[in-house]
Image (cartoon, rainbow, N blue to C red; front, side):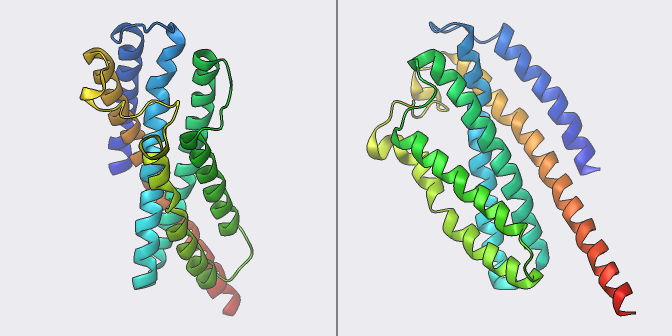
Length: 221
């Protein structure tokens, strides 16, 4: 039921967000390509949120050793890599139009790419043929250590300077009010989508765990 509600809210919110992008938000000096920004920013934020969930769930698993937390971490990591990939693709497309280059090695972009590789490696580790409990333990440790890069991505522009804009999601950033409203609507819309996908994936992993347990019991019988 929760998934259906979130799915309905996501569809409605995403449609509203697209309408705001094309008919409400003003066109910047760079032209229509700037509208990619309204997709790029929500993807980036929810990727970081996903990795925070991985971090928190990994901590809880270490303390409680409940497989449910391991499944939450795995589901969140998959979503995080998905949204981080969309963030990198939309960001590169926007950068090509704004800066004339698909990629520049500045601190924020570099730390974001490192983050993507680290969590992609985390997913590879989860797919390895290792004992269930041992794999969950190793993944929990990696999920905690990997999170060290997330604050660096978030604060890179402030710490080292960056061609990437900083503070764009705040009303005090100098954006026109309609642009800020569209950004906020995008964060909400993608949040509904993220929540629905996360719950769906957790449910899938739970059913898979139950099926594997039934198969093991059947083999032992």
